[in-house]
Image (cartoon, rainbow, N blue to C red; front, top):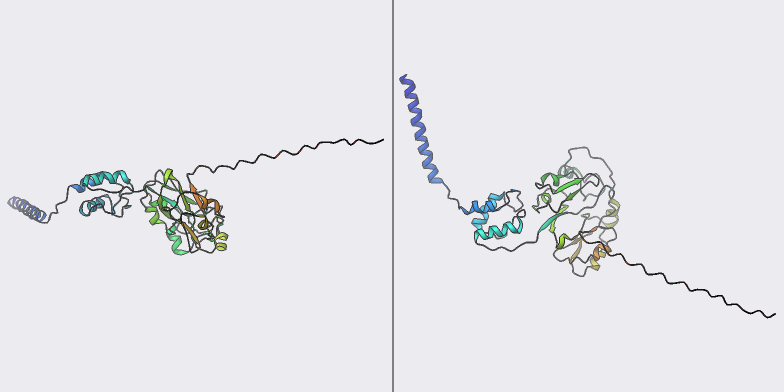
Length: 295
């Protein structure tokens, strides 16, 4: 009995001693954390998507408190969340134009003919590491949904009819996860634009015109017609491919009408006015003139 009591007392004393040591170590090495970090984190949406360039909302809050807002921006919370954070920290921040992801490929099943069948592990990253894909366009979308898999907001779905991902602009938060996931670099964040109107070249094919057109009926062929009609220097041609700078574009839509392949897309614009048909000119009425006959 004495042995049992002695053992229990020894263990209790040892536990108490270790607890005291741990407490002293914890007090010596504890890190004082600014309470503002908790305040800022509470103002963030808590998506932990990494769209801000930080590991998560907590890391964003720590950087905001310790380093200042600077170039920090939470795409999910948008300007509203950033203004709340700035107010809590006593800082000022400029509002940014809301952005949305756009797909720069229109190579649907009808526009690109399949030349082979891939039956391996079905991810875009895997296919890209092996070969260019199952069509002759080595720049086009593979349609295996890597972008859909990484989207935490359900904003991207691959349409089985076209084989292309579609972006729901109401759900898209411009976190940029899909942009990073696409191995073909086909997704791009662009300003939503006034009334959500956008104009962009829906193609990334850098092959020469004839080769690109053979691979896809709606590919950009680098003809330069859009470049010539743009009065705002918003269009550049590089490596047989046109690109529209959304910061310079004035939405005149001349380039859309000029593109011979339909590679330039216009979204959320009203229908173009139909030219009124000219009224037909009345035909002259033939008048019969009776010529008197001399008998």
